[in-house]
Amino acid sequence: MFLSVVIPTYNRKPILEKCLRAMERQTFADYEIVVVDDGSTDGTVEWLQSHAAEFPHVRLFCQNHGGAAGARNYGVEQAKGDTIVFIDSDLVVTDVFLQSHVETLIQGQKELGHNRLFTYGRVINTANFDDPTSEPYKLTDFSAAYFATGNVAIARHWLIEAGLFDTGFKQYGWEDLELGVRLKNLGLKLIKCPEAVGYHWHPAFSLDQIPKLIDVELQRGRMGIVFYRKHPTFDVKMMIQMTWIHRVLWGVLSIGGLLNEKTLAPVMRSLIQQGKPQLAEQVARIFLNWYNVKAVYAAYAQSQK
Image (cartoon, rainbow, N blue to C red; front, side, top):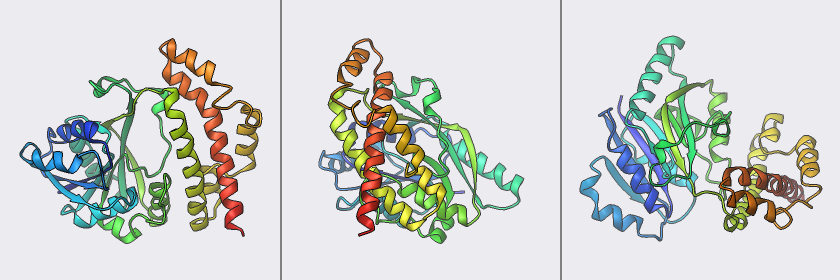
């Protein structure tokens, strides 16, 4: 088994360096790292080119800024491996990361008697930039996603057969879960691989992040309708929060939008000052989810015209 680790990146040079240094310390030997720069403007390409000797497994490819879906497709097309491992460029992994995926893939094939499977590792969120792998697993790190590209290994031919990622997802969200629907239709089984741990870094929550987080939710809502139009099922409606349940839930919790980034700012600021940014972020989810639900329905109404 030869692995191609596909990493799309866009303006994440500081954490990308930690990501790549961790990938170079793998106990498993037969792999390459396919980095696809999606039009970064922070010197990522120049830095990689000038430090190429430090990253012998890395093969660098560049494209104009077009989004994660196209970058991952480009990486798969250029990959030499029979097995693709997707991680994000803000993920720092342990030394046994690739070995764990390989062992679980092999064991899964033995138990199932076929190779219609992929492995999904554990992702732990952390705001500790200096020592990201020191973060313990938390209940909020649990994910029920079927196919998420933050930490997954899959035979390359299944991606080709499924048709790779849909580049129609131009904005944030859903391109990996949409591909997951097509993989599920091919009969692929998800095998959990908790030993393949990746630490997903993002800065501690602050009020300055709120405008960007709102924009992400608006994009996610619009792309949710792209997802639903391709797969108009109840399961997809549940995923994108386009049901009366979500509308009532987040409408009630936000009091119809009265609890928003302005009215909840004092509460969130107080929690941050108390050293509880994660709790402040959960408070923000009240209005962020309401923005998302409204964006979903607005995009759906627009699509019906």
